[in-house]
Each structure stands twice: as C-alpha cells, then as structure tokens.
Length: 268
Ligand code: HEC
Ligand code: HEC
Ligand code: HEC
Ligand code: HEC
Ligand code: HEC
Ligand code: HEC
Image (cartoon, rainbow, N blue to C red; front, side, top):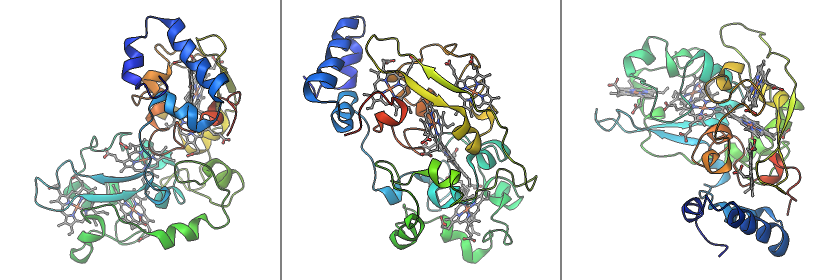
C-alpha cells in the first residue's frame, strides 16, 4: 500500500478519508522520516548533487545541427541571484521555453548579456563548444571546492543555499543593470494551514525568497498576493510543477525535504 503511486492516489482523491488514512499510516505507524514520507508522494528521482539544477537546452540546437547547450545553475547562482536571469534577462522557469537564438546572444540578450567576452567568455568561434557540449558536464573538483566551507544540506545540491547567502559566504548580485541594487525588504512569514486535518502546516518565509527573487517572479503569476488566496494550492499540483513546485523540484531544495517546509514533519 505504501508504494502506491501518486496517480493511483489521485484517482482516490474524492475519498478524503482514504488520503488522510494513508498519510497517517505513514506518519504515525511507519515513522515520520523524510525518506518514508517521500515514498508516499512518489517523488521524481534526484540526480547526483553536482548535477542538480543542470540543464541541457535543446529547443533548436539539434534542429540546427549544433550540439545541445549545457547550463549549470549551481555555478551561476554563486554570482547572480535568480532575479538577474529570471527577471532582468527574462529566462522562463521551464527549460526549452525561452526563445533563445544565437543572433540574440550575439546582440547581448539572454546568455549574451554576460557571455560577451568581457564579463564571461564570448560567442567567438573557439567558444562554441564551451556551451554546445552536447551533454551535462561533470565538474566534481570545481563542485567540491565550492562546497568546502558551505553549510551542508540533505537533498538537491546538498548545499544550504539559504544559509550560504545569509552568512555571506556567497554574494550573488541582485542586478546586472543597477550595481549595488539590493532586494526589497519584505519579511512576512506565512503559515499555510493544510486543508487536511492533522497535517502540519507549511511555512513560507518571504525573507529568504526575496534575497534571491523579485516579487514579480511569484506575484501574480504563481501565487495570489493574499494569504490562502491561491486556488488549488495542494501537494499534488505542487508535484506537477506548479506553485512551490516551480522551483522546489529542480533548482531550489527538492520536495523530498518535507521538514524544511513543514517544520512539524520530523526530520529523519
Ligand atoms: C554562452 C553560451 C553559448 C555559446 C558560447 C554559443 N552558444 Fe549557440 N546557443 C546557446 C543557447 C543557450 C542556445 C539555445 C539552445 C536551443 O534552443 O537549443 C544556442 C543556440 C544556437 C543555435 C540554434 C539557434 C539559432 O539561432 O539558429 C545555433 C545554430 C548556435 N547556437 C550556434 C552557435 C555557434 C556557431 C557558436 C560559436 C560561434 C555558439 N552557438 C556559441 C548558447 C551558446
Ligand atoms: C545565469 C542565469 C540564471 C540564474 C542566475 C538562474 N537561472 Fe534558472 N534558468 C536559467 C536558464 C537559462 C534556464 C532555462 C530557460 C529556458 O530554457 O527557457 C533556467 C531554468 C530554470 C528552471 C526550470 C528548470 C527545469 O528543469 O525546467 C527553474 C525552476 C529555475 N531556472 C529556477 C531558478 C532559481 C530558483 C534560481 C535562483 C536560485 C535560478 N533559476 C537562477 C538561467 C538562470
Ligand atoms: C548574468 C550573467 C550570465 C548569464 C546570463 C549566463 N552566464 Fe554563463 N557564466 C557567467 C560567468 C561570470 C561565468 C564564469 C566566467 C567564465 O567562465 O568566463 C559563466 C560560465 C559559464 C560556463 C562555464 C562552466 C560553468 O558552468 O561555470 C558555461 C558552460 C556557461 N556559463 C553557459 C551559459 C549559458 C548556456 C547561458 C545562457 C543559457 C549562460 N551561461 C548565461 C555569467 C553568465
Ligand atoms: C517565491 C515566491 C514569492 C516571492 C518572491 C514573493 N512572494 Fe509574496 N507570497 C508568496 C506566497 C506563496 C504567498 C501566499 C499565497 C497564498 O497563500 O495563496 C504570498 C503572499 C503575499 C502577500 C499576502 C500576505 C497576507 O498576509 O495575506 C503579500 C502582501 C506579498 N506576498 C507580498 C510580496 C512582496 C512585496 C514581495 C517582494 C518583496 C513578495 N511577496 C515576494 C510567494 C512569494
Ligand atoms: C520562484 C522560485 C521559488 C518558489 C516558487 C518557491 N521557492 Fe522556496 N526557495 C527558493 C529558493 C531559491 C530558496 C533558497 C534555498 C535553495 O535554493 O535551496 C528557497 C528556500 C525556501 C525555504 C528555506 C528557508 C531556509 O531558511 O532554509 C523554504 C522553507 C521554502 N523555500 C519554502 C517554500 C514554499 C512553502 C513555497 C511555496 C509556497 C516556495 N518555497 C516557493 C525558491 C522558490
Ligand atoms: C517546498 C515546500 C514543501 C515541501 C518540501 C513539502 N511540502 Fe507539503 N505542502 C506544501 C504546501 C505549500 C502545502 C499546501 C498548504 C495549503 O493548503 O495552503 C502542502 C500541503 C501538504 C499536505 C496536505 C494535503 C495537500 O495536498 O494540500 C500534505 C499531506 C503534505 N503537504 C505532505 C508533505 C510531505 C509528506 C512532504 C515531503 C515528501 C512535503 N509535504 C513536502 C509545501 C511543501
């Protein structure tokens, strides 16, 4: 019963008692460890920490007979906040969605905003294969060097990114157009009561998020700007990549870390 898939559970959605019954079996009888709870939701498999957040972009590359493009979140987020790329440079929160062309890059848009031969290597002939690698690049030494001195975490890159920024071990810039720009100071912490009884609420801290993101990254497209104002705000939709799942499935720490969002669910 515990290995039941999420889709099977969704079929049973009308029967709230069954969902709750299953959850309580996991939480109380089997033991509320994150690993067990993870099995309950049928979470996607995680890549090794040095490839978590890595992307292979291939909207046009294969069609245009060049190799797909490698992009690593962990190597870029030490220098730039999400806001720079996902707000100032307009990259989508879904790989393959942004209409990046080589001409745009050469004109200073998208990757070319930095990969101009000054801030970072440019688009000259010798450099094509630095981006057009055709596969994810493993950089274990570089990754190990980065992790040294940063607080560890259990999932994803196994780096506590929130802590790294708070303690100023990394200092990513919030804007490439306005040097020195700092984030808005909106600190309201929201306790989001789950709609099921007995489920510990999820906590949403604005302060950590606005260090990385712009208000407009979340409002109004992903979340209503009123507590409990977002419709269908439930785990099964989050796991489909909506709401918190926009970021917490592939770049920010993954859904496996129940305790991080639901402090009432015990850590192993
Ligand atoms: C800084 C990274 C980077 C470098 C360097 C780079 N590209 Fe690209 N290139 C991209 C990205 C990102 C895309 C979009 C990927 C996609 O949609 O498949 C792309 C797409 C392309 C495309 C397909 C889209 C189009 O506009 O036709 C071609 C062809 C291409 N690049 C050729 C090149 C050549 C040739 C070089 C070297 C002279 C080069 N690129 C260097 C990042 C780079
Ligand atoms: C240097 C630029 C850059 C930075 C910084 C950056 N991203 Fe991205 N991100 C990208 C690009 C490029 C894509 C691919 C977009 C596309 O193909 O349309 C992407 C895609 C994503 C995706 C979709 C991944 C997938 O599997 O489909 C998520 C989620 C995401 N970013 C979240 C974040 C978060 C959260 C941060 C900050 C911690 C961040 N990004 C920082 C450039 C960046
Ligand atoms: C906001 C600035 C910025 C943007 C946007 C950006 N990069 Fe980078 N990138 C850098 C810097 C800085 C470095 C490190 C310096 C260097 O290698 O020249 C880097 C390094 C890289 C590297 C070398 C390996 C690594 O990960 O460190 C690759 C590959 C790369 N970028 C690909 C891309 C691609 C593909 C895009 C667009 C989809 C992109 N970058 C967008 C700033 C940026
Ligand atoms: C990572 C996503 C994210 C970012 C970034 C973000 N918010 Fe929110 N915000 C939320 C969520 C989630 C809620 C609750 C929505 C719900 O419960 O339906 C919320 C709710 C709110 C509320 C309503 C609070 C209440 O008590 O009803 C306000 C006001 C708000 N946000 C302002 C801001 C401002 C200002 C910024 C930028 C400084 C910002 N938010 C950035 C996710 C975000
Ligand atoms: C647009 C991207 C995005 C969305 C949407 C988002 N987050 Fe985050 N969240 C982040 C990033 C980036 C961090 C920094 C840590 C990391 O990258 O692992 C973070 C960190 C956190 C932290 C850790 C705080 C700490 O101090 O350790 C919590 C808790 C959290 N998010 C909960 C939520 C919840 C709950 C939601 C949905 C209501 C949500 N997040 C939606 C990007 C996002
Ligand atoms: C990134 C944050 C985040 C993580 C990680 C997370 N949750 Fe949730 N969870 C939420 C939010 C937000 C809600 C909805 C709260 C509401 O109803 O407003 C929720 C709701 C729930 C509910 C109530 C039913 C529902 O669908 O709304 C259960 C049960 C639950 N979570 C269990 C878990 C378990 C088990 C894990 C670990 C495998 C987990 N959650 C990991 C954010 C998270």
